Amino acid sequence: MAKIIIKNEEGSQLMYLAFLAYFTLYPKPWGRIDQNPLAKKAQMYFLRNGLDQEIKNFLDFCFLDFQNYIGESTITYFSLAYHNPQRKLSLFKFIKKNKPKIAPFFNQIYNACLKSLDSFKKSIENSSLQKQIQKATQKDILNKKSLLPDLKKVIKEDLEFFNAEEKVKETVFIITPTNFFPYQFDAGSYFFGKEIIIISSEPNNLNLIEHEFLHTFITPIVEKLLAKNFNLQKNVINLTSQKRKETYGNIASHLLSEELIYTYINNFKIKQTPSYDNFLKNYSFKSEREFQEFLKEHSGFQKRCQKLKINNLHSFQKKSKLFFDTYEKNILSEIIYQLYNHFQNKKENNLDLKFERFLFKYLKNI
Image (tube, rainbow, N blue to C red; front, side, top):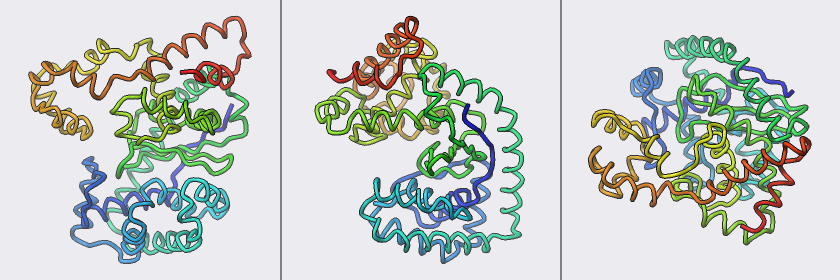
């Protein structure tokens, strides 16, 4: 069983706070500012006190000089090297593979990131905001530790289903306290060799943590499967839902990884097919007020409704089939749902059946 520990990562926590301050003071047409109580207090703090110039210059450099080629996830990767120099080599390998355009500037970005985090940390030292964040962090760590037995049980079941115990045998999973200041993503996983860090923005949502955990062995399998298989890449993009493509782009490896994980957690494990009838069950608003609150809290859903001229519960109910067919209908998810059923049945006669081998055989001709 992989080792799972709960601990704070100061670098990423500082960087997400910097994101919040930066986009509060210098709004951009992307991302969002979370409206939890601590985030609101942080916004007020930076509106009164401004943002440390060193961290502002660093974020300007990333977002503007590189025209958003460096985004939230990449900057978070760099921030996780704060006070962790042993992660530098793994970080460079990640950048070289996934962000090759900035590989020549790696040391410049790395050093600027660490220096700016030092400066930003000093700028909020001994402030009421820092004390509130420390208190919330300590409380959240205790809460997450209380969830650890349930999380270990879920992960054990997942590993047994996929026959993937060997793939994470020597891995250390670090689950950070809740990210109180999410910018674009609700969760993320960051790979540093055998050390994998999972960051989530929802305090008690084990599904988010499970989702990121599954990426640790699903994503490498998918990358191997899709390598040079251009027909499969094309089919993955064509068969997945518009909603998924809006979220993850037209990148086959991202789409297939996400679909394998979403379908496993949200459909297969609870035996709920990805169908129109189940879509209606999941979006069964009881009142206009409930619909409007959901609309307000979920910007992606809101944008999709606006495109179809849906602005109230009645129009949503009237156009629900159109909404489903346009954004939610997901043939790839339907295929994967059946794949999991077949895999489960095959395992009854072959307990050692490897998911990777089964997946390659099942999907190669879709």
